[in-house]
Image (cartoon, one colour):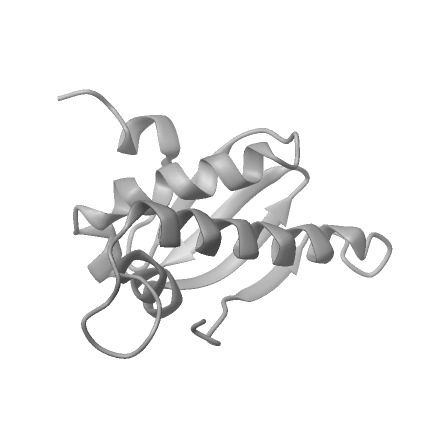
Length: 120
């Protein structure tokens, strides 16, 4: 397993530490899903998707039930964003919460998951 993990932050984390706990749980679920969905990495250990997750997802933030995934500009410009988005949406759905948005480096507005996963 790849040890790198994103930073975890949450609205009102001091009074509601369970928000951080569920971000950690969500991170674990995403990694499991990516191991199932993507092939093994030719370098190092873990799957391709898990390696991309670890390298490009910088922070997970729980904003009152809305999950904000802060990611690199490289991930935002790649086809992997949809794969990561699918896994993250499924993992967050396990927490019975609402929307997922991506905050891509150098982009001024959030990218909602439904726009990332639009049909061509």
